[in-house]
Amino acid sequence: MASRWFNKPVGLLVVVLLLASFLSISGTALPALTNSKNSSVQTPTPEAPLDSKPAGAVFTQAAPDKVITTPGTTPSQSSSLTVSGTADLAFTTAMATTAGTSTPAATTPLTAQPLPNGPLTLIRLQTAEGETNLVARLLPLETVKAGRLTPVDYLPASEGQPEQILALVPENEAALFSNLPGLKYALLDQAAETVNYFWLKFPAEPAPAGETWLDKSWKVLDQTSSRVYFKGVLPLYLGFGFRSKLYVHKAPPRIQIPGLTQPCPCPALAEATYAGMALAAKPAAPNLTVGELKTRLGQVTEARLRQVVDQISKNEVPGKGALNTRYTGTAGSLYAAERLFNYFFALGLNVEYDSFLEGGLGTVASNVVANHVPADPAKNVKPVILIGHYDSLGERNLNGTSNPKIPAYGANDNGVGIAGLLEVARLLSGFQFARPIRYIAFGAEEQGMLGSQNYTRYSIKPASSTAVINIDSFGYNPDAEDWMVLGFINHGAGLKDSILSYRDKYQINLRLEVKRGEPFFRSDDFYFDQTQHNAVVLTDSYNLQSPNNHTIKDTLENVNFTTTRKVIQLTMATVAEQAGLGG
Image (cartoon, rainbow, N blue to C red; front, side, top):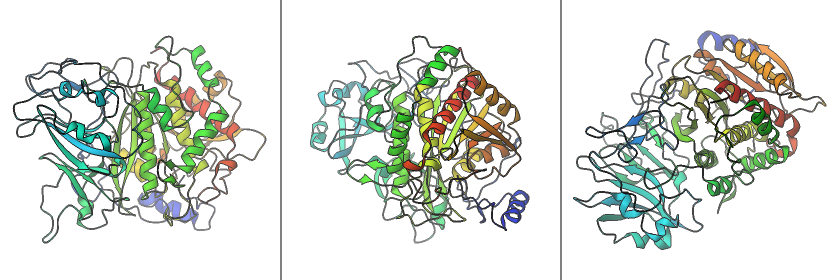
């Protein structure tokens, strides 16, 4: 949760200034976010369309609700690629199918696996002139069938551009791909690590005289007419000058390519991403009943929550040890986002990065957005959105900045919330719902809710969701009784009443203190409320904020996992009910 300063004498004055000007979050002016046009932000009105921004491919795994084809093709499994198509996403896809081509099934498509142990290399494979069917040429290869090729980028054939993929392979197997008939090979990065990969499109305007849009520290790996794919030094710093006009996308750590890779769920990838978070049992029936939901609620255990919060807090990375921080602008923040991406991907959700410039620090940050498509994707129905921020802060201050070397474990703020997102997504995956469910792990919350500010301004229209539930900092409770604040600002009264009824219906022994109109603008539900979404927050950080929040003491041993379990159970019941039991 963003820095608390309401108990200070200046707090009320700052509140007045915030409500009057809508410019201040933590006692300082909000830094500007960037879009595709310039470095300033224009707040959209409900009548106005969203400002557009360049976007990358939306990598789809589940049933489509929009089919993208190129002229001359017809929608079919072999000739089209799908994108997540909730109506409010102003995204386009780079993954369109080449007109008139098909993908013969040479063998069974691959199941996504954890990355192989040992050094990895990034390679590019392109079809040679006059050749097609890249997928069919790859599938028969033993090293591909063994799951030792992980695609991270795909471009279809177009005028002047051959079909190509970028993929990770074990360093000692890269040479196996160098002389494949009909394919061109290039070794792009000998020491590959996906967390360092980004892409961008150049602005229409030229860079200032004597300058280039690309910083000299960025290593260009692949460049086409449509985008530049590059390796950056972490954290990726754009600064506050002319490069702040760039819209830089965090590149995904893996993608699905129809015909080459099977849609998940992918059990091995899930368990390798978060230990103890194995996929839930496949539902006996696709529609979730009240009885089955009660069973799933009973599967939310304190032992597993403790285990996953511990992993989130330590933020261990193979070969690098425990990073002990998710502070915005650090490598730890990017590794945490990538881990979330991989887990949602393993569940079979449609997952993407929503990147933005954190203007106060001058670095690229990302939200992680995962969609559980509804039973009937063709229906244009409003999603149920569960949100929580994944970044952390290691010392108290007024503006969300910190020494990046200070540990920022963030177990309560907001490791418990991220554990909640993961657990709800895990236990509800496999079921069908009438409405889409969207899970969003926001970045840069501690710097003034910048991730949710960016998202509500560019990626979702006002009043276009069924419900928004924010879970943030709810693991501190020294009392014998389990309680929680249920807060909303303007538009969450009906949702609040529903949550109270779900608590009673599913017999969750949790006292809820309802707060309305209180200063709940220190967390990510604020910007949703300001754009006419029905938004609430479950938190303990209004009445009794943990003294450990925003300190190095926000660790596992200071979390009450009984209260945490009950909050997550109530959250799961709310998401399922709002999404529509019965499919």
